[in-house]
Structures are given as C-alpha cells and as structure tokens.
Image (cartoon, rainbow, N blue to C red; front, side):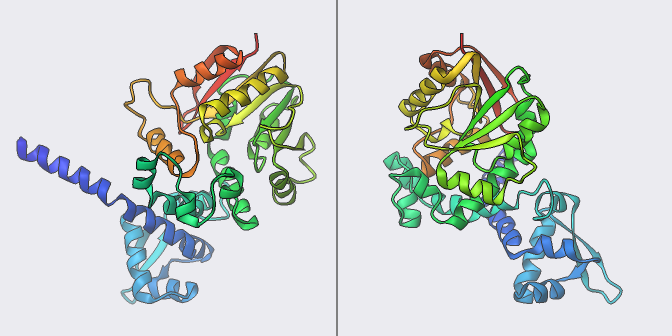
Length: 348
C-alpha cells in the first residue's frame, strides 16, 4: 500500500513539475499555426507537408505534432505509402483555430507572450509582494494601463483575449441573475464590448454603455463594434477620476481583482452614488473558497494577479465586505459555472 501511495504521489509531482512543458507545447502549436493549417486542409497531412506549409524543420514539426497527438489535440492515421498523417481533433477545431466562434487562440497567445514571461519572476513577486512587469518587459508598472497595453498591437490582442473569455462563459455570467429590470447598464472597463453585445442579446429591452479609457474605446469602435450594435454606446473616461453617469446597473467584470482594497472601495463608492434608486452592481470574479482550500484555478489566478497587477482574487465574504463598506445591501452570490462567480448587490 505504501508503494502504491508513493507511486501516486510521485506521478502527481511529476505532473505538476512538467506542467509548463504541456503549456508551451500548446502555445507553440497555436503560434506556429498548426491547427489553422490543418483546419484549412481538405485532408490529413504528413509532418513534411505541415513543415513545408509553415516553414519549419521537418524534425521539429514531427516532434511537435507527435506531442500534440499525446495531448489529444491531434489525431493520426496511416497513409497508403506508410506515412503518418495528422488532423485536428474536435476539441482543437473548436477551441484552437482562429476562425472558430469559441476560439481561445488569442487567450493562448497572450498567455504565451505576456503571462508566461511574468511568471518567470514569480519567486521575486512572492518575495517582494509586487508585480513583475518591469523585470519582464522593462516597462514601469506605475501606470497599470501603460503596462498592460504596451503598444496598439498588444491592446488589440488583450481585447481579443477578453472576447474569447466571454464567448465561452459570458452568457452564463449574464443569466446567473435576472437582469431584465435594469434598463440602463454601464459596463465599467468593458474593453472590447463582448459582454455588452451578449447583454443586449439576452435582454432586448436594455441599453449598454461601455465606459473605458479613451484609447480603449477608440480601439473598440475601430475593431470590435459595428453599425449594427445600435444599443451599445461608448463613454470615454477614467472611472477612478471621472464622474460616473447615473445608471440602473453597473457591471464590473474582472475589474476589482486588478486593484488593492482601498481602490476597490473608492470605485464601489462612486458606483453606489451613481446607482439609481433600486439599482445595483454586478461583479464577475473568480472566487476563492472561505477556508482557502480552493478552487485551484482561482488560487493560480491570484498568483497571476500578483505577478501582473496590484490586485488579487478574493473570497465571497471579502467582496461582501467591500460592497457593504460602499453602502450596498442585499448581496447575492451565484456560481456561473466554468470559472467565474457573479455577485449582485443592490442599493437599498
């Protein structure tokens, strides 16, 4: 029995230790265009054909494709002349090709080129208690906006990342509570507008205004909104510095986890004062359990907040305390499945 336990423990430790190998294999296959190339092909391809199509070495590509088969991202079949032919699995077609409505490609690209580099300095982040943008990219992190959006291209990629997240779980988030009584909605830090689009789709009687920094709203208008999005408007501003318009409901989706407690209270206080009577605020965050036992995704996200921002993931009781400090009452918490929970707090 002891031997069986030791084997199980060692397998788990090895799995944890080698986890980054899996991540980087996935990142590389996406960034090289493996899944898109196979998706565009009308038939399975050999390693040589993929290598030629993507301008890589045959040996390197063959090893990468083989690893993707082991990860169940690709499948194989023999050809008539004895070659191994590769094609996408249903999972990779659904989530790893750029053209798929459920694509996570941009999220993977951001993870590879930004998050992965910051995590190289996790040890320093734990020792120092602060984010590591300056070490990772040579960019001062005093202004979080400038740190996150180091260039126009980086901004578009980050906004595409947010799109991919809400394409998967946005509808669950917006239907965790019945939001139909709220007609005027402000999405603070609404970024690409993906959540706003879903909101007006689910609740046909509402209008949504995306409140974000000028550079973000300009990029949103240029790359993400169309003339058909008539019930979505844009409001340029800094929600920490500028006055918030009156609204029935304010949405803060993955916003508060970026900030320290005092900044959260400052923002929630402004939201409370701008809420119409009977209005409220909807928070969307990955919640930690009250006894610190999990879930592991939220725990890892909290470490990510350490290396990337000045914030953290929090427990439901911590968000309840922040909301109460700002004046909100009747706080309700609901799991939206997937990763996130939704908190609806009303103005008494």
